Structure formats: C-alpha cells, structure tokens
Image 1 (tube, rainbow, N blue to C red):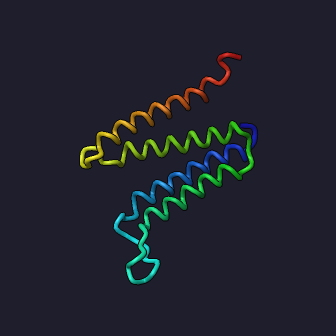
Image 2 (tube, helix red, strand yellow):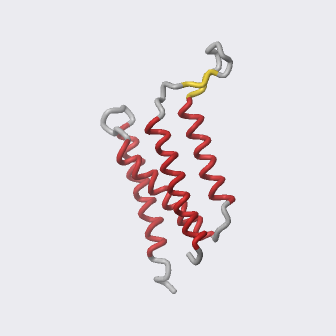
Image 3 (cartoon, rainbow, N blue to C red):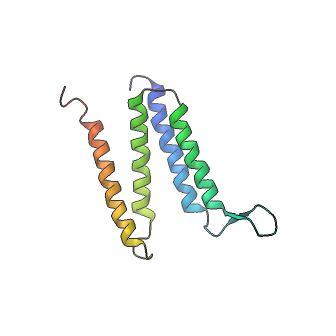
Length: 126
C-alpha cells in the first residue's frame, strides 16, 4: 500500500462493515415496514436495512479507486469483522440451527485463515 488512499479504503471498509453488523445487533427482527398501510404488504425492517447496507459495502469496494490488492485486503478485513461478529454474538446453543451455524462458523474461520495467510506470505516464492 503506497498511498494514504489505499489505507483509507481498508479503514472505511471495516467501518462500513461494523455499521452493517450493528444493524443486526440493534434492530429488532419484529419491526416491519407496512407498504400498503393496511398490513397486507409487510417487509422486515432488518432485512431491508441489511440488504441496503450490504449493497453499500459492495458498491464502495467496486467504485472506490484503488489497486486490486488493496480491494482484496479490504474485503478480507471485512470478512474477518463479520466472522468475529458471528462468533461473538450468535447464540449457538439456544437455537435449533445452532449446530449448522457452528459448522458454517468453522468453515468461515478456515476461509478467514486462508485469506490472511495469502497476505502474510506474499513474497515467499519470489
């Protein structure tokens, strides 16, 4: 990373991801948006906000000008934040899907480790 703009992309990507995780922590799943006004067409507020937040994160990484390696590093840092949030905040024992989520959390942890090994061993073969 040669310029401050490169580092800025990683930092802002992590900040946007933390805000996205906060959507899941602080918005109750029972809140809905009533589109028609009579209760016939409802959408979960959590789903709408999380999809908009995910779209903002993806568009940020697509349109913020930087090198490809910086974008990959920023996406790896964002995935790490999401994985840590899953490990810290998901109630694995109290839900019926706890075992399946535990499995996918382990697989996600493996993906995070593989991605960080790629960045920490960049000139081993050179």
